[in-house]
Image 1 (spheres, helix red, strand yellow):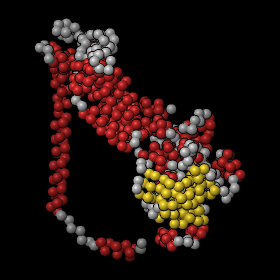
Image 2 (cartoon, chains in turn blue, green):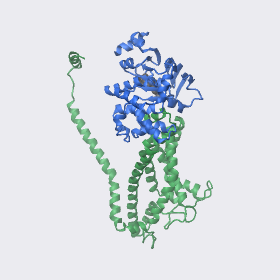
Image 3 (tube, chains in turn red, brown):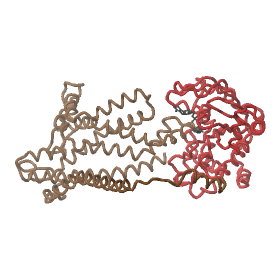
Image 4 (cartoon, protein in one colour):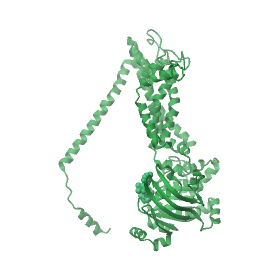
Amino acid sequence: MADIDKNNKNNNIDKNNIDNAIDNNKEEIKIEVKNLNFYYGDYHLLKDINLFFKKNSVCTILGPSGCGKSSFLRTLNRMNDYTEGSKLKGEVLLDGKNIYDKSIDVVELRRNVGMVFQNPNPFPKTVFENVAFGLKIHGIRNKQFIAERVEKCLKYAGLFDEVKDKLHKNAFSLSGGQQQRLCIARAIATNPSVLLMDEPTAYLDPASTATILDLIANFKKFYTIIIVSHNIQQAGRISDYSGFFLNGELIEFSKSGDFFTRPKDKRTENFITNRF
Amino acid sequence: MTEKENNKKTEDLGNYFPINKSYIKRKKIYNRIAYTFAALAFIIGAFPVFHIIYSALIIGYKYLNWNFISTLPSGFPIGAKGGILNAIIGDLYLVVIASCLAVPLGIGSGLYLSLFGKKRTNSIIRLLNELMIGIPSVVWGIMGFYIFSTNAGLGFHFGFSALAAGLTLGFIMTPIVTLLTEQAVNRIPVSYIEGALAMGATKWQATKSVIVKAAMGGIFTAVLLGVLNIIGQTAPLLFTNYYNTGMPTGVTGPGGAVGDLAMLIFIYIHEPSRILHYKAEAASVVLLFFVFALDIGMRLISWVTVKIFEML
Ligand SMILES: Nc1ncnc2c1ncn2[C@@H]1O[C@H](COP(=O)(O)OP(=O)(O)OP(=O)(O)O)[C@@H](O)[C@H]1O
Ligand SMILES: [Mg+2]
């Protein structure tokens, strides 16, 4: 990933974010989840979740299929608001403010908390328009700013060199791995401070996966990153914190070092060792 | 897995796999039968279409010339001389008026149903909508007559006119556009909508810039099928417009009535005049041609509109 590092230096990408990163106290808490309970109708899925995410850290959420990882992630940017019959109790504090508070502007919340989905889901628009979309919906009209920002984001997502001749081609003409990186570029275009990633490499080949994992390691400087993953090795490699969900309960949450070498709970240990 | 383990697995599965030879023979026959049946059904279904085109062409061909579509009917009985310009212009009036009502209303409710509404209210609206599609057009005609043509209804007093008929046809068209628009939007992957919302788009922004664009083809098909449905209607016109052999002088009141191809065919066929029968056949060829042209035209417009939305 020397390329990306070079790009970053040459282009001085996103000064604001870099400044933020330096100013930030590394130990500050970005998101705190308090007594979170989540229901699909009568089905009590997430039970009494308590955890926190530190600023500029990477946290991986692990757990077997159907344990509620995606649902949990979607409570952090209120994507569950649109799920018919869903209900939530408890608090999610982002920078100390409850995002479920009536006074919270959901639009601003989602600008600030970006999301990358499990399946690459670019819009049926050109590569350029996909990234520019996030700027336009927030009222940015300055063409030059948009063009520069799109280029920076694509560079930052390690995609620019591959697509610079295809900026005005439909995004569906890209490969799966390129589409996913396009979605990442799209997600960072709105200058978020948190990135939620739901199994961002689930459908990608090893090479594309490696590219994206390197990106994530690089992204830590600017964002608080929360990733859902099925891949334990990956999680161990890139994350500072790890959490293990089972049947909607948070079984264990700790620094990745402890989590993988000295799990406190027997169930965590079983999960980790079965998969290794 | 090592080679050995792999071999063991195949052994466990066993080599015994009972193949039913007579069933394999039979399934090929079933396949052939199903194929023949489908082909037959298609031929039976398509035959009338080709027959209509063929016979209309055979009978009406000598009247199919520029004069026929560019002049008003004249002579005695009226229509024995001249063409069908009144009906072509009249259809234009009716389609435009009906579309002014049905396109915004139908697309709007279709989008609402699939994106904004609550589930329970939706199923009620959807049921009502389907009921409306099932209402016979003659009933719509009577309703249009009371509401728009007479002064007994809601105070509109448009008389037998293009406006009364166009609005009535618009009400026939609306539920069709609604249903098909909703289906078109529902076919869009949820991931597009979620992708837009997750970036902080409002529902309207997501609708405007992602969904409408992705569903544009389907929405145009919805409008097209709506127009095709009303272009052939006669029953509602009997009560709200009837027929005008000349040009309208307005859209309401006396002089507001327009000609119409379907009504022209209906009326000519009932006249005891061989010339008019031939002309009715020629008019139906023109109607078919318009349907065909409309289909192609809509596809073109849809393509252009997508390009325009891309620039917004
Ligand atoms: N919209 C919904 N309505 C009702 N139940 C749902 C809904 N979405 C998810 N569920 C249920 O909630 C549970 C958790 O789903 P979720 O998608 O959060 O699991 P997950 O941990 O992300 O699984 P995977 O690893 O397979 O993606 C599942 O049992 C699922 O059936
Ligand atoms: Mg999931």
